[in-house]
Amino acid sequence: AQSVTQLGSHVSVSEGALVLLRCNYSSSVPPYLFWYVQYPNQGLQLLLKYTSAATLVKGINGFEAEFKKSETSFHLTKPSAHMSDAAEYFCAVSDDPGSARQLTFGSGTQLTVLP
Amino acid sequence: SAVISQKPSRDICQRGTSLTIQCQVDSQVTMMFWYRQQPGQSLTLIATANQGSEATYESGFVIDKFPISRPNLTFSTLTVSNMSPEDSSIYLCSALIGGTNYGYTFGSGTRLTVV
Image 1 (cartoon, rainbow over the protein chains, first blue to last red):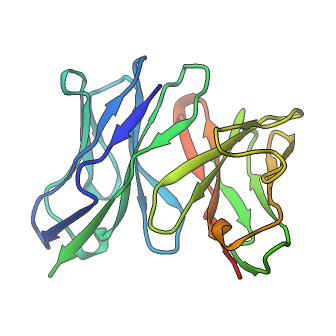
Image 2: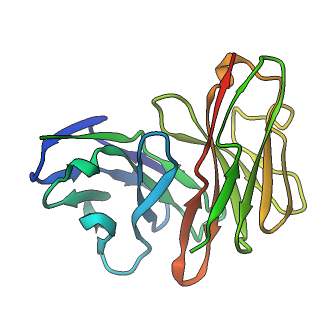
């Protein structure tokens, strides 16, 4: 079975500061990992994904994440926060090409950006 | 990548009634999923919608309450039956996209309020 743990349900950073959102996973097979962002009253937008290629993954809006197998982590970072980054962020894992191929989500991290 | 059109975007329903949510994908996809996002929480998988056969439900979800149809590779519906206020949530459909753009895309969600 697969699972995702997001440390910190709420993270606050100042505008221009480093953003670090933590994600640890558990999977019985090599995982595929995803970060999604959800703005208020909207659906989910894919930020980036790891599918067993390069371990450092660059996504949209200046975000990136590094897959570290030894730490079972896939933390999301952005060098300089912008006010528009305020949103809910979800880390998710899939065991594809496993049999289920469904996404399992973490509990989410609400990012607040302070002026 | 594929785009999912989901409707309705929101609805307010009386308890005891049913609501059917529709998702249309603009390309053929192998797998479609339905998720529930309760207020302030993460996404929980309801079921995998199987083309031409009964959906595969997760623990805690049953067909009588959440009947799902998937008549072809681009369309699926979720019905929330005999609704109660506890069913007030956001419901999202998702599709697994294969190939070079591998990943999961989501509809914009249906915000359901049961009164």
